[in-house]
Length: 169
Image (cartoon, rainbow, N blue to C red; front, side, top):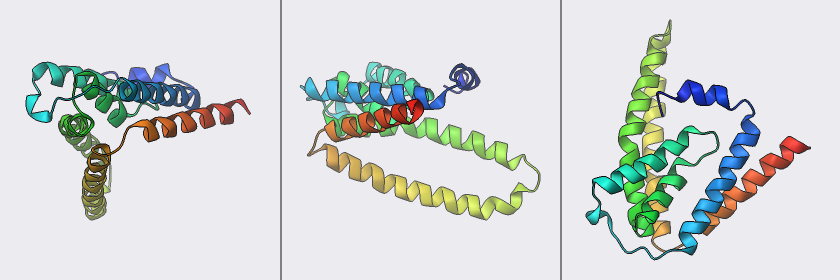
């Protein structure tokens, strides 16, 4: 994703339309994996082919409006994982990518003039995001152990349709 970042930004000049389409595709994908849900595998059975497959779904997140979490959880479910295991696997797979992206962006900011004065604020922001992110992931995994992805599919569809309507009005 990192190598194609500038190409993807240039390729999609209308962000509302592109985000709308990606949200609608995510809604269809989440609905489909939920509808065909016959998943019984747990995280302990994950192998390199699962990591490769879920990683390919993670690449879809470079497109505007694509949900990294949604696509990777769906990718895990397509590989046969139950919802909570697919979510755990998706978030474990995201950790190296998010850390690398965060470090890269931090270095870009730190190379700017006068930015060292902002280090305490950036550190506080990082810690706040990490803690709230951990709670959000924990909540989502607990939620998915009891409930389906349909509510997220509906959310993606409603936001996607709303963005299209805003664009056309």
